[in-house]
Length: 519
Ligand code: FE
Ligand code: CA
Image (tube, rainbow, N blue to C red; front, side, top):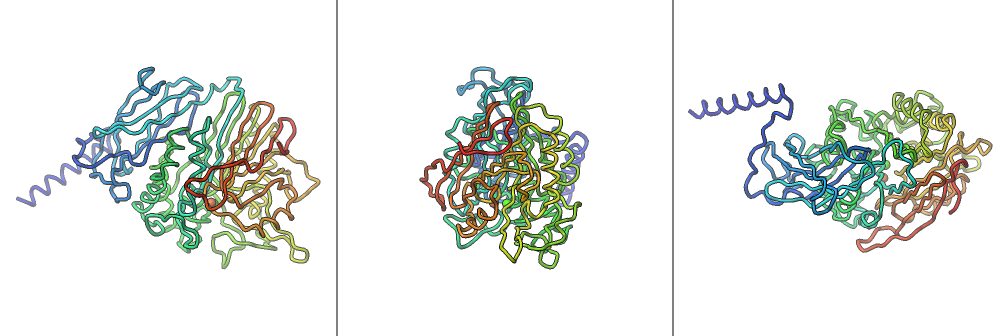
């Protein structure tokens, strides 16, 4: 009897699976909302990937977000969404239903299409009798629109344990078109010497553990506020998976097969927790995150992936992956080594050459200008995980920028310091022409290099017009057709919960005059 009941149930499950395979996830019928689960919208709401006629809205159902199942049964559950032109949800309302699936951690990604360009919208979700908080978002201007201004917050590196998110609190209160986040959204690792608060557990190795890590970050009210206030455009760096990984190479000694398994898990958890297009969902260890955005005739933005297709760092200890300080490394001259991979490099070069917008913004995870340290008699020491460790790839990037012409800003993060730099076609050669301006944002909370090292870096690199690592923050970039302003917002390290930010320094880049100048 028991056996027959079991067979019957297995038969039903097999039939359900077969249906799912035939008709895709749309065929999955949502189950009735389970009783007594608690409020499902603990991780807040978010929006992203603004286009002239669409935007992605996101949430995840997780009444107990640190539990392996999020506090929900392994069943598909229905979520209603609403988007409107006003905060009372009475004008231009759109509605729909999304079936949140357990294999996606009950994440909700809805690409709302058919929207008006350059317009503010409000959105919310409803499930199990609960209503989420309200998010605000904004679409991009029409591609041929004469846009007078673009304001974005450039941010990266938000180690949860190393500080509070005062920067996000300020970002949430700003008037912005979008937040541009260039990587290290979560940190997989800890430094026991620098903890103002702690992660929920040890270094994640499994899918539930990566999900719990993302939940820890999203449980921060200031981060949730920054998501609810603006659409985000994102790319990633290394810590979303593992510090200093490069392609399929792991610094922790996993072989490629084992590491790609971990990368697949980390990419899936990333996808499940961020407002990216449902079309971006990873296929195993592959997830295309690099993308291009247009902001009317004012700007075109490329968000680059500097990790998934990267060649392994040069001259590692015993050939292992991972960043270290290197000198006299002959492998650096190998032109086959790449940060973006051949296909993405070509895609960017062609895009830059074809672009007719007033500004071209190249957003990527790190600092392109050099930060090597020259010591007489010892030569130049560089950090192998940065662009200094990929000089031929950097030459190709700068050649592509120079060949395309026009006004280019390179935007980055990763290095935990505010940097304004002249980008020469051949960095480290003072006779080479400046071809672009570079702005790198300091970290939201992760600690930076010591002042001793920073002084040596500044002394060895005159093209670093500004480089300060002792304060945390983000960069406000404000573009008009004639000029780009960059305001480095900052607060001392470690960031206190009640910290306020100040303007550390301000720079401009003028159209028609490559490079940066003090504002
Ligand atoms: Fe970082
Ligand atoms: Ca990084």
